[in-house]
Amino acid sequence: MGYSCTTAADNMLGLIRHTFNNGKYSNGLIIAGKSYFYEIGNEHTDGAVTGTLWENLEGDMARPVGSFRIGPSGSISRFPRLKRGQMVSLFFRLCELQRSNPSLLSSYSHGVI
Image (tube, rainbow, N blue to C red):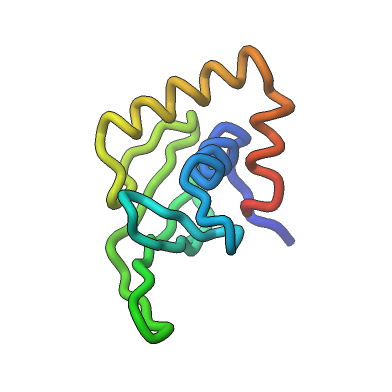
């Protein structure tokens, strides 16, 4: 069984991963020069994606920095360490790619969930 969410929410997580990819792990991110990874949470009936963002620390340690939520429309309700302007910019980029290049957008989310 797979994780169930809307295409827009899945695509947004893929866009975040593509934009902030650390180049090592599929769920690894570099935000403002720091290394993070995310874990997907439980499924939601509305199609949202939620999870936890973890900061990588020295010595193979990590600590949770907060939870994230991507709504069914692909809008980011919260994502620790991302600034509001970045979240808005990502949503505009999502909408632009949905119109102009949906196959590229889909490729960003391939294997995300």
